[in-house]
Length: 130
Image (cartoon, rainbow, N blue to C red; front, side, top):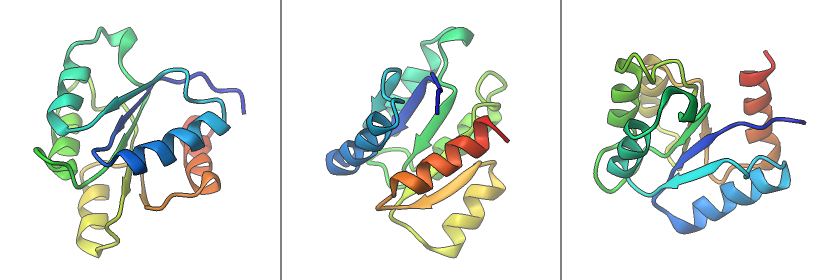
């Protein structure tokens, strides 16, 4: 796949971030990767960018140390500058209420960790080559 997309990974667990980064590296999608380790860091990264510098994809964990991923998703989808950015939830939670809430708030996809290379790439392909 020949994609050059800006990706914001919001993940506080270093191991999970490393796994996701390896998947992106394997698929040559790590050259425009920004990693935020908290919801506040993610908001700062999103608010301090011009429209052209915004990520084209957000990979978002639900369980973050400050702002929950669900609340962060809600904030992103309410912001007219950010709401069009596809958000993929990457989380350890397979709770029906988390899945439903994520989709209700506008998540483009929901993947339960540990993520596989194939699953993440299928989601990215679906988002960028529908």
